[in-house]
Image 1 (tube, rainbow, N blue to C red):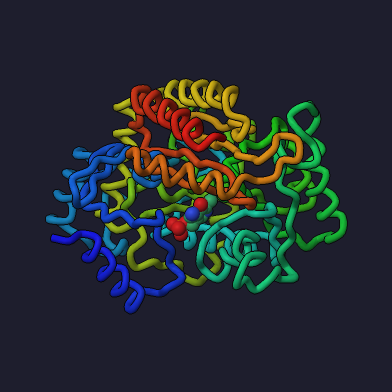
Image 2 (cartoon, rainbow, N blue to C red):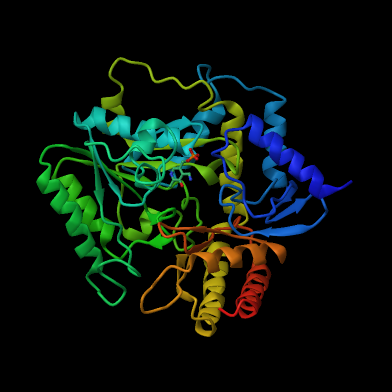
Length: 432
Ligand code: PMP
């Protein structure tokens, strides 16, 4: 077969029947036909190490998860209006990983839908409409989630900022107003939230942010940031929502949840991506008080949310994370990887910052370390070259210059060693 010809036919057909505003990775697209743990295989039989796919949390097609799903889908899949052990048991298992103030679970099918529901609940609870978000954030693709996502509404084709949405400054210790050398940066960034609250008295229903910023540029929050933000929000009568869609379930290594790195207890936690290892499953977990306010006479029913197949999937994923000690593995592998990346940074000035927790890592690239001009063409060249060498990476951040690394949690030290060595070689080859 002439594969190049076959790909171009498929690409043309894709363009004719699928919305054209769905992008495709890489200059020469890949046709991935199989996955196993941290590896993906194309139709030519080439193997790739997946360094970016955080939904495949415990690994592509993890056999234990696949078997459990197969068994359940061959037994029963219905809506959640019948008694079902898995629904209740899974909710209890999830709650056991969360602080005790979080007591009630709602299952949905995507992170967008979960964020949408979280905002709706915060509005019921407070009787207010406004929402505060962080600049550059992305919270999903539903209409409400889009309104909460500066990454979308401020960007190309965006509809702009709604009057009831407020943007707080992104607490970026590398590029922002307060930087790594400022021990009070967390408190200072939180001041911006306080000022927005003071300008909008009695209006803010909720503050929502990721507990490490993903689309915002793979940015860990400064120490004491959320502690102060949550204090301000609560003093003003608002609800604090943690979007754990990208970073939850042990990825950050030191803790099971991203918000735990900040020593806070959110009022609402939103879970997605890794929760079902790629199966469409997400959840909103709230306090009893918020759940009671939402239970106002109107039923909340979700056709697929909480179905037995999803519940078995979620339970099995949670079990595998624990039985394979993936949180500890993420901590050790992530630290090892960041050490390697920092060595590469010391040799190649184009890398100017390496940051992260566990297996949620960013490497920022600049043309010049003083001007901090983003190295966009450079990073794109690196991503293409790494792909040719069998490493799937991609970029993120408002300036499109952060290499994002958030592989399936089974990514190991050998994978990290290989990735770092090839990155070093690619940067040398490109003269960066
Ligand atoms: N929140 C965050 C932080 C996300 O990164 C995403 C997806 N990239 C979403 C919510 C939306 O999740 P989904 O695509 O499952 O709707």
